[in-house]
Image (cartoon, rainbow, N blue to C red; front, side, top):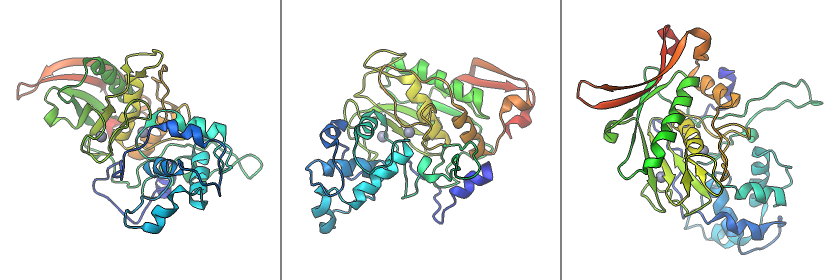
Length: 347
Ligand SMILES: [Zn+2]
Ligand SMILES: [Zn+2]
């Protein structure tokens, strides 16, 4: 599986440090504009098609626009072949009928609040649209995984770096610390990684913080709703929540669950891209009032394929633990992870 998965993502361009987020040319509009676009299709001219283009550019379905390209700017209001193709790819990724028309189901799916990381990076199609599939009646059928990686096999942590520290930047709401710690525990229980909290965030491998609007990384947040957060590919380590959302710990109506969001973004921090499996943690959308607290088999298969590891439980007797220790530099560290009798399980 690993070699097959990697063969799908071998590229001529390699990056030593690949940010997950391409630099946005302008802030993403609130997703509400999509309501007015329902029913439109190729050939229509509608004012809000320019917002639709921005939406698709942000999530990788259209190429970035260049401000000096006057032809491209003049055509920005037309629902043309390019927009139709973007809709079709989106529909394929999200398991919708591939019509190229902004039907009710497509608009409804596009309006669900989601992670700000693009579904497609550098024009390389991820998720379902990037996979070879065998369907019943069209040859042999087998289960196809829908996880994805970033378009560079270097976008992962080195094999020796299986223990990662995480820290919260000053100003992080206290309500976030416990659910984020639980999310790290869940990943630790299902992968070869272990995690511990670094009380000095400046030395942490992974750094968690809350920001509003433009916060200096070229990907401004959009206020309440829409994009909920984003993070960067290994080994950058930045994980940003949109501070304008109503965050909560649990399933509360109208609010977004921190632990569910953290599980998703940690997947990015470890090197996973988005998945088209709706039950997977790496599925891009997260609705208010719901929790998603377990890794899906698709998530686990993805991380195992990326790091060429086997499920630790199959190789050793492992035990979850939490502990507080002092380092030689007298820094307090909370350890959350697994103790395994057979250390080769981490290799
Ligand atoms: Zn994401
Ligand atoms: Zn950010």
